[in-house]
Amino acid sequence: MRGEMDDYIYLDNSATTPVSEEVMEAMLPYWRAEYGNASSLHSFGRRAHSAMEESRARLAASLGASESEIIFTAGASEANNLAIKGLAFSGIDKRHIITSQIEHPAVFKVCQWLEKQGFTVTYLPVDQEGMVDPDELAATITDDTLLVTIMYGNNEIGTVQPISQIAKICRAQGVIFHTDAVQAYGKIPLSVADVDMLSASAHKLHGPRGVGMLYLRKGIKLSPLIHGGGHERGRRSGTENIAGIVGFAKAVEIAFAEMEVLRKRLEGFRERLIETITAIQKTRLNGQRSGSLPHITNISFMAIEGESLVMKLDEHNIATSTGSACSSPTLEPSHVLLAIGIPIAMAHGSLRISTGRQTTAAEIERFLAVLPQVVEELREISPFKINTKIR
Ligand SMILES: Cc1ncc(COP(=O)(O)O)c(C=O)c1O
Image (tube, rainbow, N blue to C red; front, side):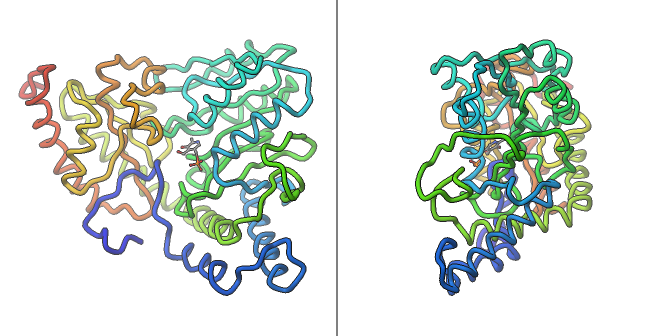
């Protein structure tokens, strides 16, 4: 899975994952001999079309959906935009949207943009583990509420929301419910019976980057974002990325077949990480202690800049993150950590460690052997002095 990067420990699987060998094998024919356009009438085209439809069927089955309810997109950012803007401009005369304070930018920036177009958005607070309160959500719904969009599992801290409960509330009140399930899909079993729209992305589960999907319950109409040749039943025009779609379906097939085994292994790594790292003084776990996504562990270190920690670990050939890959360059404290009430100084010193299918116990141990020493070095040069010798 990694080739020349063999001595590099990659613990940033929430940002993206390495494409697995089986996925690569499945995709290669569609970049080489099978380059047909799925809309073409000749046999090349028809073979591309069947590969796409077989993949669609496999992805639909993973959600208990029918094929016509799956729309392929160029990733989950597009799927989220299509779900939210597509519904906002579908002609329904309602202008209130409810979301949470800890969404990925591909949801909250869409909501902020819609506010400028005259929509009203409620950003629900979360508790100190990052959980939305379903009762508070229910009380926020009005006659004008068009959409509730709450993520399944958080990409920075791993908190899993009570999605089934939230979806039931929305269904009972006649409000459409969307969930950004990018980090949860293929990682934990999902309860999607009452979910109306769901976004997922291939590259978070060892599939290719640049392919995603929106599950759209039959009967819900969206205004398309991309107009053109009328692909995807007129809901998303553009020549389909057959290799990517085939790779996505293969990655999902593997993720679902291995889910329970992998989940247990990653939960074991998470336990080991939490136990060892929180034994370093002035640290705190961000998110849920249990019930979290198995692959994400987020810990804050007092008197350290998260970015310095990531760079120092990189010198030791270890890839980690301060939180959301997208907001890292801005050096702003994470909106997720601020929403769960972490003081700003502590929010600046957060590290997200995210594991994947390729992560080994030996890698976790090598990382844990390096981390305390790196933390101590950084605290020694930190202007915010804390006594690192006293527990
Ligand atoms: C929760 C969540 N939503 C959406 C996205 C965006 O997905 P994509 O990279 O496929 O556009 C990501 C990826 O960082 C994510 O973690």
